[in-house]
Amino acid sequence: MKRALVLVSLTMLGGCITLLPEPPPPPATFVLEAQNVQPAQGAPIDAVVVVAEPTGERTILGSDLIWRTGDSIAYVSQTQWSSRAADALQQTLVETLVRQGRFRSAARNGEARADYQIRWEVLDFEVQEETMTARFVADVRLVEDGRQIVASRIITAEAPVSSRSSSVAADALARAAREGSARIGEFAADAAAEARASADRD
Image: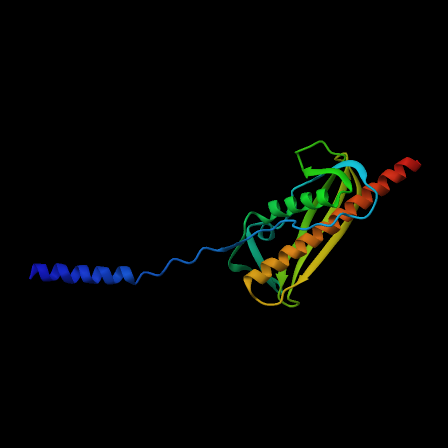
């Protein structure tokens, strides 16, 4: 009788184990990087520029991809960047500046002595449901010698999102970030060139 009860208990225990939920699949991970960057038009500038880490809301600068509907935001399920968006965006902009070739060199803030610094706040980096677009917006300032603001501009870039697929959303966000970085690079180089030309005239 005892042996039968033990066998029944083991059978029930085995059944409980098989009823446990399966672990969720690991999140899909996407890379955010500069990729192909065309050389920029314009005369070269004999100056070094450094890029500060972007500021902004932690939700859009973390590892998660953001989907916005109206005034509410949500994380794209089971999807993330390979690193924090803040780090990836900073590195993307540095690589873009180097490949555009207008400045003598570009680096992250703190890695080199510089003539100019790009300080920026990321205002939007998300997929917008209403327009089905990935949107990148940054408030950018070019600062000389760490003190004087040479120029500032709101930079915007968008890319269409053709479906609600997480991979499509990640690709669109990356394209918007790359285009935004290219526009920031053009703005910074043009502003630095104009500042130097103005100083020469004075």
